[in-house]
Length: 273
Length: 306
Image 1 (cartoon, chains in turn cyan, yellow):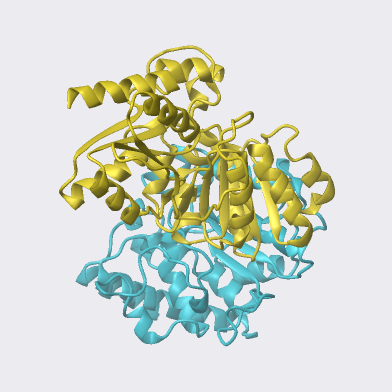
Image 2: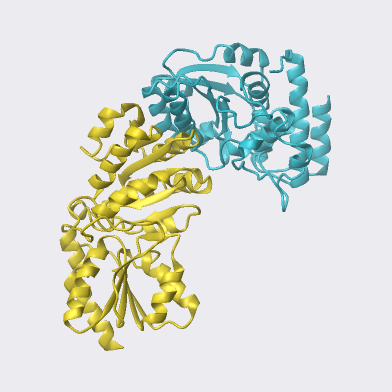
């Protein structure tokens, strides 16, 4: 496990953002905003917390990670590349004909992708199944599921939330990338999920809220996992959609739009600073 | 029939400690033994079928052999997208066991009918679809299903199905069972309609019509060769199913015969259109032309017409 200090993590994140920006610019892919909001969370998870090894990808005791918000896959792919699961040429096969990687991930455990996602509201249930299996098999691995806040509109997520608490799945960690923007606008204007933290709490989870771009807060909270015996864990990470590029931040346009040449150069300049 | 199936699963669970049984809060009394003996591997997921399919996928990804149970519309239709992505495309070892094929739940109303399930499941990759015709076939299928490490949809009736076989049949996935052979017409039947077909064959025999009856218990993978062989040997062919005539057994046969190109007469017997009849399963089967008398009359009428 790498033990960078915070400035090294921040450097890593800029690098990840630059690569994601390039991939999205070159392929005219959507979802750059959703990918940028999750950079710090994914960097912390994969470089500090999740126990996986590209030399032994099928290890039965590995931690499991599920990107339930599958549309943030470009960040996921870049992090997997940095962890050695994907090669540089694999990233070149993102979102191209005769390619390797779609704009929503397809299961390939060898490459670190545990399940296929892209349709929202599936990941937490699957994580629950894995957490149950780990409990029954008396295994110590943990299951991390990254959800989006818009995804919480899906009823199936709440089915999983109820079940996980009832079955005391303290080996399950849900992280909500709460970037406050969903496909057609701000979450508060579409389906207001507030008070979100109280909702999870009242469903029997232990809830922690953090600034999802602040490594100090991320580390402080993730270091405490599992929070409480017999209760599932949720970390509500308050983030900014499009984080890192000023003109993309908190703007629904960048749920879809890929940068043109001028915007690419402007964005890259901000990410080089 | 469902009792025969799940008693066999319960028997197997003693040796096979990877068997997990999930229900969407249905099957009163059906799982009592499994639940008491193997409580660690039994989950009533609650009235939350989408979650059940996701959990089944998570368990299967952790090397468990998972059986999921509910009434067909809730198991198959509400959760179609979970099945599509989590189970079918990922090719996971989950057996979806649906109860209430066709009009089994008669008086409970159309919300509980299973009339579109075969059509829906047929479109998905990797899923094997099997419909046992009687409790003995259900028992055989339960045993086979354990060794079958890929997704499966098993369509059951409920209770009290008459026996098609006197003793345990040679039941193999993808291998249709010939129940009678005759040179005049051929009937392909599936599930509950196999027993009906058997009686229709006897009636036709008395009228001098020699009939081949084939139990097409496996809808996917579909045994096209058998259909081609039977179609070549018979000028008049019927399909019998307690399902819409679109998308199920009749459609599967029609596709084969049409592509083969030299077919004779083919008619699908099943449910063409749902009307608002209120009644039990026998009443509804009569109304929709799926009883022995109705099928017999329809076949004779079609034969005369041609």
